[in-house]
Length: 112
Image (cartoon, rainbow, N blue to C red; front, side, top):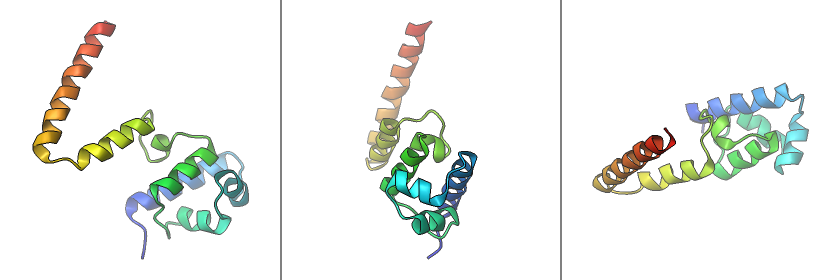
């Protein structure tokens, strides 16, 4: 089964970063504890990696996972929060987002 567009974009970014570091597939495989052929399939868009594999690749590249998936500055806890939030009923999500918005405004005013 072909990978999703998001997985293909992830694979392209992994390849771009790997090549920018003059790293071979074998070198990345060693640092990420993954097979070079498997990484090559991810880079080619033939595989849709799990979040665990994506995190290992990010670590092997020395980059935060959020940056590689196209969200610079997003920490793992933020991604986890979004994932958990998405599992809640809509009315609960809306209430939590309103509370987070109020906290963000409060924090911004405190910094000023």
